[in-house]
Length: 243
Image (cartoon, rainbow, N blue to C red):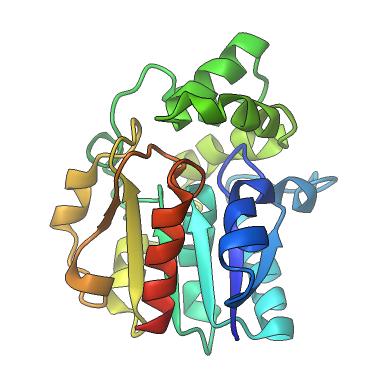
């Protein structure tokens, strides 16, 4: 069986992949997850210049011990995988979504929509109203609102605090270059109704190893397609790892 490591997004948790890990893929793959909220607990020395190197070391350690075939990353989790990719020997491929690859010359205005609540994802302390607003920004289907609110409420605020520092200090590698030069297949998924990510941004990227030659669009889903259209998400993932 194929072995997959799932890494959740900013302000979420491994529960965001529960449909895949505990249901739709349970008979087809061996699934492991990283809980970024727990991983950052007590890490008082972290800052914008060393966050990704810290996470890369943890991902590499897990990969060394488990020899994953694929890694799947949502939002910040996708960026963490791409940042680690040059060190990860033996991977067959990676799948990211909600994580437009960013270069050293940031093009945030092209990669992201100007949503009124996008800044909440980079704000450590959130009021109840702000948590609700961020959950609404993440979702197209509000039937998942309470589930996402619960994840945000219980997430580690340190990650939201550190992301602006990473951007300000340039504490990251050029992801566009990493993906342009990778020799393993890359799948990129995008929720058709994502309120935060601009899909046109991907059109200017030269990614020769892109699965299917294009970004895979998941209908009837926003920034969390693994929740909102779990069947379609899992079907694409299975097709990718079996092609």
